[in-house]
Amino acid sequence: MVHLYITLFVFQVTSFVLWIGKAMIAVGAGAGLYFYLDKYPIPNVTYIATPLTFSIIGSYIIASIFFGVYSVAVDTLFLCFRKSSVLLVLIVFLLSECSLLFVLCFS
Image (tube, rainbow, N blue to C red; front, side):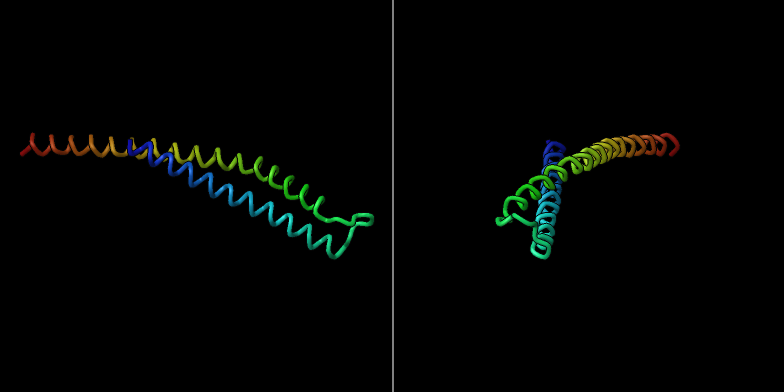
């Protein structure tokens, strides 16, 4: 049951950190476009919110696609770590049992 809680915690933290990254990319793209359009205005565009909205939404979608790869990589690394830690505990247990048998047999 503890492994389930640890797994859920790691997955939730990973999802939150990746969401923060996607939001920061979208906000950065929106801020960059705002300052660019403030310095070099587009002719015949009087309301700047429409290009900004499309830019923020588009950059969030593109960041979500790219961060999906990172999410899969983090999940794979975590599952490999969990598997190796379980095997390590098993190996340590077996070695301790073998060394205990060795000490008992040759004492």
